[in-house]
Image (cartoon, rainbow, N blue to C red):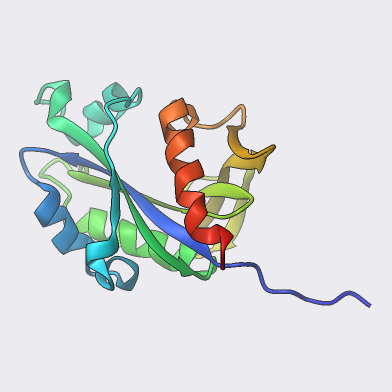
Length: 183
């Protein structure tokens, strides 16, 4: 008879794309602290800031078509406190709510939040868009597998976004995985 076994906890992160003319790091933290994962032990949050952002022009159209491209900035914020994977749906719903609070006059986002988690075996993003490789979790949220851990490192899949496939992102996730290895 098969024995049910709960999955190991994961580390949650949120990729934050924001307009620099509206937000700075402190104001972002204030908004993120509305969710428990980013409120508790806020001094332990880990920030990963990287200039490689190939999707900038795509988001420029929605988020700030009247501004120049470098007005968009991206920051990855990791909470190094293990939590249950089941929180991914709640985190995505919270992110959508927060984004909707910051819609501009045209209905475009001023803030784009993409929550995800890092496990010992993979990196998963949350999304509201269905696709062949995305698994429906409920309440309009899908899990989007982006990296798998094989042979001592994370590897992108052919649908992985280019920034998450970048060697520096892989190195960051490999380093962050260390928080999970000794649980």
